Image 1 (cartoon, rainbow, N blue to C red):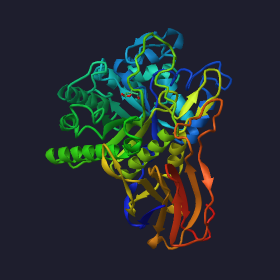
Image 2 (image 1 turned 90 degrees about the horizontal axis):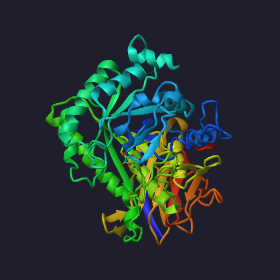
Image 3 (image 1 turned 90 degrees about the vertical axis):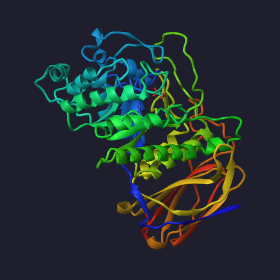
Image 4 (image 1 turned 30 degrees about the vertical axis):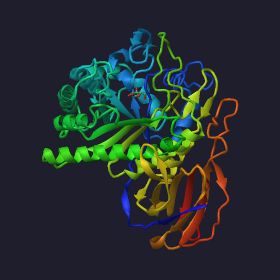
Length: 504
Ligand code: AHR
């Protein structure tokens, strides 16, 4: 058995997590909206046609913010198609995903749905085919109280009170050749700046997200980020990061498990770029990171041949290995809570998603549902920086990588320390000795493990509970030092109580 030593100190604090770190994303894509969140006639549909079985699972994930309506979709989207009487809304060709967009769901319905899901909307504006005027009129429609053309139209269409959408993305992945009306960094910087000014003149209280590099693999990375920030630094509150990780079968799982190293490097590079531009522009304000698309995603080169409505697109079936890698990634996000104030799991329903629906049928939790739910539930608080000594493994892409990827969160008011650990070791269990020092004695309440003999195991509608976490027996003796064994290739949640009479 391998061994690892940890020192956990109360005062080694990275940052307090923002609730928005646990956000997600719904795009008009495949069956995310149609037959995902919305399916009139479904046995669980409410009076607006929203599936309440889906809503129930979304609430279980507790996602406080949801990015909408894209994604690639937004770069060709006319938001005015999605307002007013549904029968009058046009059917359009969606060039991003080769689909027929019926516009049955638009911004008003999505705001209603988000309220039911206990989430706020993070709206993206179209900076592909769209203009600065289109974007500012959307802000006026959503956020202006009354007495103007667009705000009165919203009231006429049934929403007297403004939607008050706070966070707005200035386009999506505008550096990507796959994007409708791709821009160069300088073109984007100029267009986004003029759009931001107009949007803020309509509602000065909004927060804006600049479109960062759509991935570290882009030839323009990270120059894109520097250039666009030099245009936008004073106008924006966030810069976006997007990253997806897929299995590469040449790597014997090692590189895939170590995907969190790539995510860490990406975050460090963009944080450094932000710092550079802050210094260069002599700015006093901070721009934070919005990691508003992240997930595990294989098969990224799917092509679509027919113009479909509500047909499967990007419906990845996640296995146990994917869930382990996913756990490593979410730890990276939480560990950078000092710089990342928004993150969106991409996506939420059906398309590369933790939740899958059957048209007319039931809903399913994919393997990645569980690590997200656990971190969303127990990962909010003060992120600590433990001193960790751990064995390493050799990866092809990243060199030596620690076998344990983790995040440690202290919830002072709940008297709880919650530790999430991915054990990447493919051959050995790892025995961890935790030294809690400044906390005094702590009690291990729960050790929840996600692992199994078959890394390719998946959940299906026929066997929905094939992969799910289980509780490991624990030694519940209060002590300042605690030992726990983490099985090889496992995702672990350890819940400690700092109260010696315990019972959280
Ligand atoms: O999430 C799927 C797609 O991935 C999004 O539409 C796009 O922004 C990214 O390339």
